[in-house]
Image (cartoon, rainbow, N blue to C red; front, side):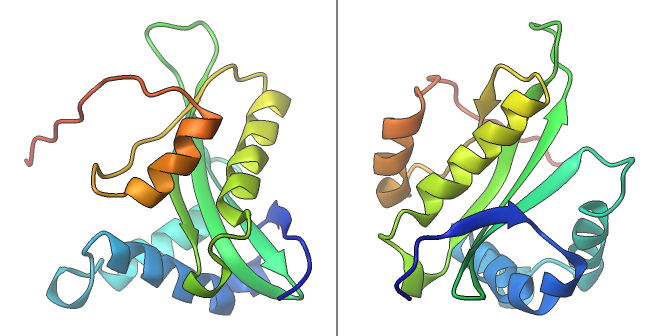
Length: 153
């Protein structure tokens, strides 16, 4: 891998290269083995990228014809803004491609899509133990100071 990454929208033909990245992302967050996402969630997630009525989008990073990273993001309304906001939900770079600017390129790709959609804010969250990623995130965005809570229903 010698070339700079190309960031582009995911294509239906990318599934076989996207899936290992998606699986790696989920494994990083402990969703593997007995806690793995059901296949129906993966299929639905993939289908949403190509459904014009869905607000969920995907970009991939490609080097020399191989996918090396992914990001998924969505636009939604907010009670504190008139226009929509963008939530960068998933970001992952293959282990072999880390340290090559893939994560930064993917985040900047989401920024570009948000600007094109008239969005003025992109936000995301990461686990507090993800210190490596946080060093990058601290260069590209401000920490909000908010703590995330989840209620299981």
